[in-house]
Image (cartoon, rainbow, N blue to C red; front, side, top):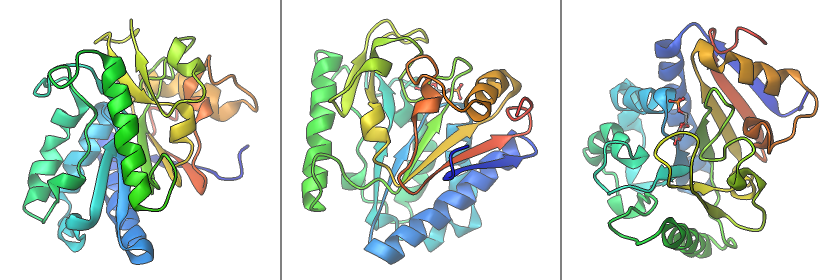
Length: 253
Ligand SMILES: O=C1O[C@H](COP(=O)(O)O)[C@@H](O)[C@H](O)[C@H]1O
């Protein structure tokens, strides 16, 4: 068992989403108290978006200075910027509320879309460059300090757009990569790599639903699992890794 791995189990998806929202607000406040700003990496997915909705509804949302929060994404579908399938578009359920709390849209950094870039490769290169520029403002090299990096997990154990036995899960030496022929539609995607994800201080896997139980059981039950075969086993935060789950997803732990 990884000493820095924490498993927190909530009764159901709504309770998990509300708890994640409260935890995210607290983490942002703590980061701002320590460093003056906070950087968070958002995910798409069922629980990921439900959690963002709960942040918007949380009474404590106004306690954060949202003008000092940098927002990134762990993966994105390479589609038109206004496609409802894009994680960044789905996150508008929160971002539009945060506009009323001083959110600085200049600090919101979605991955590139198909109307900005001709190919996902160009979008990936553009995001890698953006990350490097943001890192340089912080005195870091190539990647900003991510205080919290959220990841959903698919039933197949994919995280971000790193799919089992797929090229992205085998990639090394890059921070941002492209996926063609994604096993889950849409086929073209852009994703942070394992190397980039694993620089985050805290990695949160947000996982709900009985369909996730087999993959969660494998990752949390086995000492050694190949990250290429089971991508969720290959992510960790430098300060800790939190599995924030509902009881259904935890059924086989
Ligand atoms: O394709 C994706 O799926 C995962 C998980 O989605 P879920 O609906 O099964 O929770 C998500 O984390 C990822 O960001 C997204 O691109």
